[in-house]
Image 1 (cartoon, helix red, strand yellow):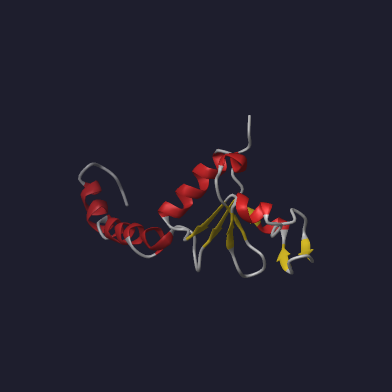
Image 2 (cartoon, helix red, strand yellow):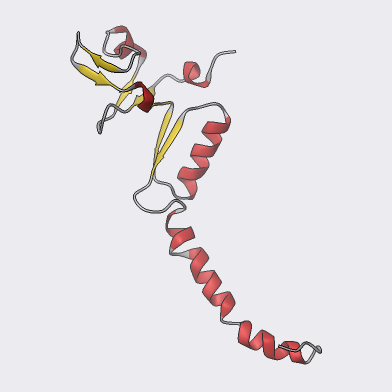
Length: 120
């Protein structure tokens, strides 16, 4: 059975801070040596430890899901996030808002619990 990367038509390679898509045509043209270090014939620095099948930009709900699914299928995955994984919904939007809304009812719930014999 072929590996996940063999089934892909294109792969991402991250040399330093720059990225480009490595296709079979680029590989056959000798632009990728397959070894860490500098490909001296073309002057292209390739860092093999930064070679991924999928590079996800954004660690929000969709980015994390895409990363996990691809990794479960055997892909080498990297995910870039500017701040916190989870995105706006988990860290600043939906989830915190719902927690504050839920917590706002505690006072009333504690008062109601006395009618059921609970001491708070």
